[in-house]
Length: 161
Image (cartoon, rainbow, N blue to C red; front, side, top):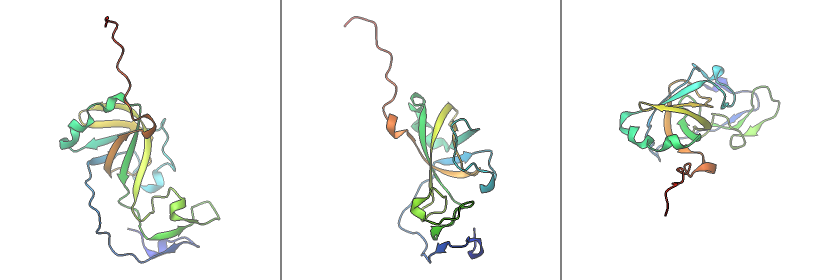
């Protein structure tokens, strides 16, 4: 967890009570080659390294039909992020921004999202490219890309009818 000393100049934090109004169910764990935040890319790239969405076995049947999509939206819980900054000063930028004007992992509800490219599905693991999170990050959900939410159409039959 970060401390008060981790705040950059011009940043502002607020005192907040512990969250208690929602319960999330993690469906698995994300495996990436990034051991810490410093190693993560600023934004994931769909030509980046293979990463794995390792689902708990109970969720394996939920993957049925996912192979019909090329792009997925992955939601994950940024469990190592602080949650109390309302104004942030991004590194390498002299300006300050409100938290909601940034894609920073530091947010009141640290939910990360990424549009990723589906590489393959194997034994309850979804191999993707385009993530920018730390190895071991809890997985919240997987969805088809919202702009392509209809699966690919099956080939048309050539039989009469």
